[in-house]
Length: 211
Image (cartoon, rainbow, N blue to C red; front, side, top):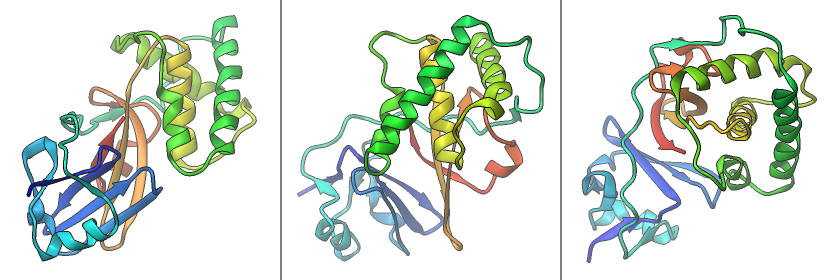
């Protein structure tokens, strides 16, 4: 019987090893030497056998295939964080920034990663216009020091995604991993442009999930 990763579980092969992100469990996992069990293209089928047994025992597999996932975005080639914003924030941007603070406080009140991912959910279609997205990201970056929130990559990315959403825009929120030593990181990008980090910092990470 063919098994599949649960829809909220994501995986990527790095060398001969398999890295996994369990969103519901708020955990990253690594199966050394298990990259070969990941089959089925972007449907993330899992080949049965002893290497798959830990995933079965952990409840990370399902019998129904998940929706086909998107391909990873292109590797970023440049960043906007060192460029100046075109101008100061207007009333709409200030209102959006206030909404960001409310979104993040709600996310912090929840448990794990899932509440943060919900800040990207929109009730209406969002634009991916590159010029508008880059301009909004530059503006938000310039406003960051005055916002009453501090944190690492997850918080910074959630804040930017929330601001873009409240501005009617969307970008890719990318989660990446590296192994030996293990580390995880996330960032926001539009096409090949990173919106909230230095490109050189991202080279060590392999994307595992794209929101």
